[in-house]
Length: 236
Image (cartoon, rainbow, N blue to C red; front, side, top):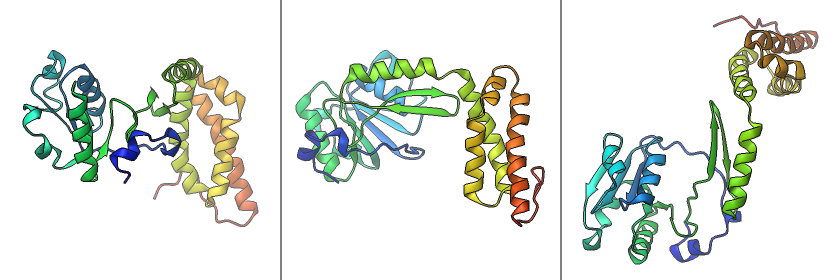
């Protein structure tokens, strides 16, 4: 893991975009002000969060049921609160204290989300529509916001319904079409079918039935190639 000095000048081009499962992974936030509150509001939706500070905003006190608040004067010592942390977020109003927390966290192999500059964890701008999540990150906050607003306009409700349809039909495809490349071709043909997209805006059931026609056609092709017959309706 890169040391603190290297992370200070880290280019975003060296960061790989990932989705992390934070269930059971502790995020420790140092600082109970507005920045700490914003970080706590985000991370507490995904995993356990501890906020360590001498003072807390009213909203953080109100969120006490979702996270752990620890009253502490961090200038007298913070090291013990890093125990068990997966991500540390130095978000105090004291830049030198934030730096000291970052140095110690990095020394212990703990990921750091910085509030000043770029650490080894960057939280992107996000769009969530049902099961669809899009993450956006650029080196310019204005461009990031522009892209998010633009994509939000493009991401109509039909995309959520398509995600629902594909989630429903994929298990059936795994049962009826043995080869992964054939299943991928069916999924792509469904996505390219403009009539399915049109029907999603009017009737999910009609769109789903039309999507199944693509699967049935590919199953017939598999049978012609000599694969064993398997019904879309079969259940083990």
